[in-house]
Image (cartoon, rainbow over all chains, first blue to last red; front, side, top):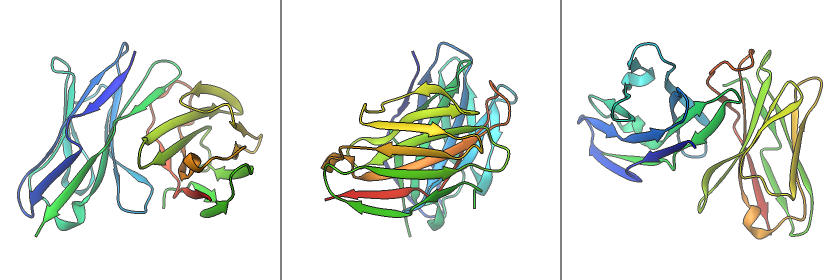
Length: 113
Length: 115
C-alpha cells in the first residue's frame, strides 16, 4: 500500500519568515517523491523531486526538501517566504513498476505582508 | 508553459449529458495521466496510459472512460453526468521510458460545470 499525509491543510507565515510544509509517506517500494505547487486557477508545477540520489533536494524559487527514510518524511522548506509563494502545495509519491502515483491532500500556504 | 495542452478550457453542460475532454502530451512523452480536482475530494488520480495502453487505474468511475490514441493524445469521456462531476480535470504527461520515475508535467486543466 502507498499513502501520503500532508500534516497541515493550512499554513500561515509572515513575509520574510521560514516556511515548513510537512509530508509523510508510506510505500512498499523505494519511492520517488515530488512537491508540486498550484497557484490559483493554474495547473500544477513541479517544485522539486527526490529519486534516490542526494537526500537534500533543491528546487525552484528557493525551496528545498529533505528525504528522511527513518522518519518516512519529505518536508518542504524555504528560508524566507515571499508573497508570491502563496499557493497550494502537494506532496506526491510515485513507486512501483507501474508508477503508482498518490497525491497528498494539499497544504494551502498563506503569506502575510 | 508545460507543453501539455488541454481542450476545451471550460465546459458547461447539463446532467445526464456526455462530454469528451482532450489532452495532447508534451512532445515525445508516452505517459498520460488524468486527474480530477474538486473542492470536496481534492486532487484524485483517475487513470494512466502508456503508449496507448492502460497502465494504472485510480478512483475512476464506471461512467468515465479514457483512451490514448496512436498519436499519443488522450481523451477522457464522461457520461451520464451528475452535479458532483463538476470539477477541474487535469491531464499530465511524463517520461519517455517505461518504469522511469519521471515527474509529470501538467496541462492547464478543463473546468467542467454540470448544471
